[in-house]
Length: 440
Image (tube, rainbow, N blue to C red; front, top):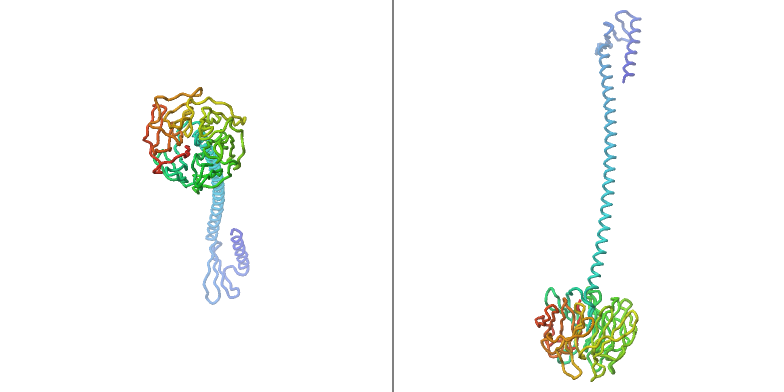
């Protein structure tokens, strides 16, 4: 703009010089009238009386100053805009950096929270596993040592007083204080089928006697309480077994079946189920044949207690199985030999209750093994004779259920050294005879 203004002024000066040389005051050039009024003013009149143009050099100079000032102001504004733009860019960079930093912090926090949750899940799983291991994994005549109360009892099979074999299963819930039906087994099983719980939610049932003449069983089935999809058949035992006992081994992965009756004779053979591989294998035999006995898991060994040697001879002897050496050895004998009784471990002691003695009559007497020897609880027999029943440990008490000619359930409390029969009865109206039960 400054250059244009200078060009205009120079042009006007050249024009004035040309006019001054032609005339001192006025003249006509191509019909136009031009007059210089002073050194500050120029008058130009076009031909035929057109509009007169007056050029005032003072005003032009003033305009030039204004334009120059405006140009300077514009330049200053541009500088301010540039500074503002730079400041905005810097602010945006800071915001972007802060956002990235915040995002990284949030990501790091989320990762830390995720890792903490994973660790918590692992801790809960370990605690749950530990609690399951502490809880009793109990079978008919086969009980894991109990160091904390359990919450459920499951009664399986047996027969009613009319000799009908049962496939029904029911569970007692400590919280609800009531029994409720579970899915029925695929096969009706009586005459002391054997069972064990695994991991607090899976139940394995094996052997026994089914409906029909001489229908002794070697088949097994399994129920997953969490899946709620009913019983499924699994690998069968190598031998037919009724009147047997069974218990989970200390590794919590193997189920040991002990002795029993194969439909022809009382047997001494034993076998174990590898639960993970679903395969049976024989282990060491008992030193003598044995059926209608009980077994418990005690100090990481299995103790087989009393039972029959023949239809008329009842063992007082007991045997102890060490799974680490696969051997049986002698264990202190009971005071009174008996069969068709119940046994369980309660607070580190083995209890046996009721049954039929060698003389052929039923009893209410109770013996306890304290780690050294068996003692008779003379002042604490059951409230009545009971036989062909079973027993479990439940909330640090001995619970005796089922049996011939009885529908009540009795509970022995070691703390008070007393029995009571106020426990809720099972749902089978006539009761269960030669059943099995587990608690967990």
